Length: 62
Image (tube, rainbow, N blue to C red; front, side, top):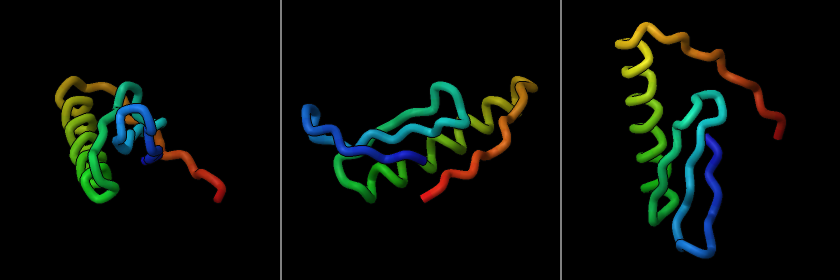
């Protein structure tokens, strides 16, 4: 997950680069993390149900 603060909307925006279209947000950092976990789970369940390939995870350097 990549979590970034959006000053304009006053929310944390979550994206998952490995999973196309997998994005969400939260008003607090903790909410954004939970929403991100839920979005990942939903994306994976949908891909599995559709028989779509699941991309391998990327390693991001600190």
